[in-house]
Length: 184
Length: 248
Image (tube, rainbow over all chains, first blue to last red; front, side, top):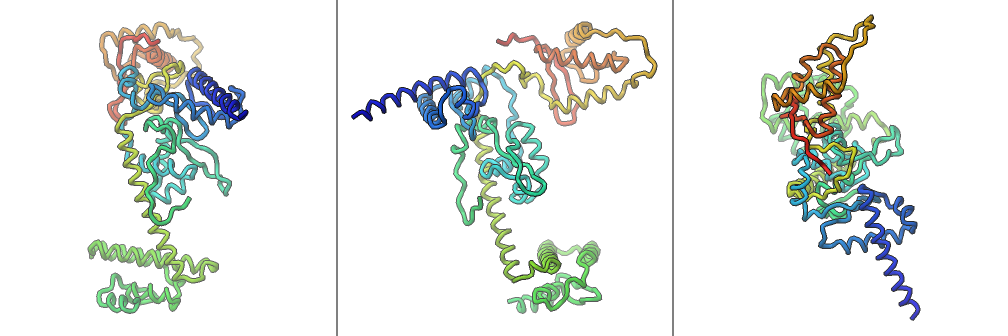
């Protein structure tokens, strides 16, 4: 039964690492990549992932919230506390985006990373201005370039995108309605 | 099927094409082109379209007929393009079918994203945001700058453009201090809580003075004694004095 002892140690390690993770995210107060965390916490990726899950569970029902966007983690306030935080912070958030902006955001969120050409193919209209405005608002960003002639820019959503929707991660987006063909 | 439709349409053609290479209803042109019985390369689709546009200017046909022309026209363009690219010639009918399927698929895909966009919008409107902490020293709280930085910069550029360009031979150094301008702005805002952006530059006689005034404004915004706003896009930017809030 030596494995039980190991399991217990493992659990304690994960809890300890989760606490360290919480402390680091609190102090840095910004999005931190998993790669950075491996360095900071001197732990392999698998342990970081386990600590992330553990911290998310530990924060359930609390005022703070662990947000994950792709390989970035950030400690933010819980969406359920948005009202009270807004009262103290009085942030100026643009309350509404245009329908075109939500459409473009939806396409990017579900199909990222993708090029402007692909977005325009789906929406059937020129999206230059919308993309520019979403980028300016920090809701999308260039995530790389496609290795094809002209090396077009690839777009993806940002941490801020999760923040304005109060999502813990992209996995929390409503499921893509199914119908017929779904290209990926 | 095509023959039936053709017969039906020939009684009331969408448009009668009159070109040296083909003379007759456009529907017939399409079905012949689909069977490769007419050479589309000999027909200028651009001038055909020009003629059509001229024709509908007077006739003003109903929408469904305009749409029908568009569909036929699009198919002709597709066929002609396929003809110009020999390797794409294989199975034109299949190509058209595939093309139609692709368009249908795209419309369905778009519809799904439109639904998702609505759910994102509802979620955003619910205001359940998450917030990062406040300790971001380099960030000016948005409440004080309710104007895009580009709009602010271009408004300032307009102010500069109104002032004489820097004199070529001015040697005498102007004395403009930031502290003085800060005090001047404070007094202006104390007298009048809201000022037009251009009004704060009304005493500026030179570009240097305008630049220092602008710096003073930015400083007031930074320390929380002023904020800038814009009622709507392209509206005049307004400067508002406000009590300095002790943050942190």
